Image (cartoon, rainbow, N blue to C red):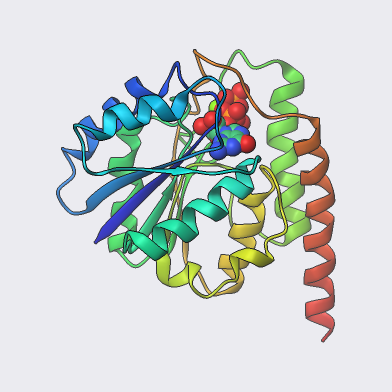
Length: 246
Ligand SMILES: Nc1nc2c(ncn2[C@@H]2O[C@H](COP(=O)(O)OP(=O)(O)OP(=O)(O)O)[C@@H](O)[C@H]2O)c(=O)[nH]1
Ligand SMILES: [Mg+2]
């Protein structure tokens, strides 16, 4: 099976080289899947894409999409479309490029796909998973209860971590949904694509992950994202409500 790991980057110059090296160390140990990587960079002012171009010279399985929008959701939409059009993947992986998701875990994320699952999630909220212990209480509550809120509102109670950004998704399922219809800019994308895939019949599976705080670079999550996430959860609620009525 062909796998493309889609890696959005915005100002990850301090991480991207070490991160890709770590990813390729793991990829070289995985035999059941034929894996490449697609970096989706939004013209990062810190020169992330120049580093990727340098790495491409010694690795022909690193692809780069220089994108002109902003927002995690827009980056994934552009990256998924590009990968499906040009790279012939059977599976797309979502992953952060700042070491928050351990590359080692790719070894656990992919096998359920071979067992018939369509949407495998690296989950912080099942047994064995975790968020950083030193997160401030407000951030812990926000993540944990934001997730429970979103699960309830969107009717996704069977999935314990709806907002995780570490996932493997079968392209057959993605082809059943219209990516352009996901009118989300930022992190809310994670909820919407899960919602759409489950409604398209995706079989989900969760593996535990320990989310690690980034050591280098800055977080891009901002208040605009939080607002979009809340509004979006209600949009999904109403969409579900009216769907059930019809
Ligand atoms: N292309 C692109 N990538 C982005 C954008 N915003 C965030 N990213 C990338 O998406 C991944 C996750 O973003 P982070 O800022 O680390 O968000 P987070 O992991 O929720 O926050 P931290 O825990 O503080 O790291 C990283 O690889 C970012 O570089 C964006 O607007 N465009
Ligand atoms: Mg991060």
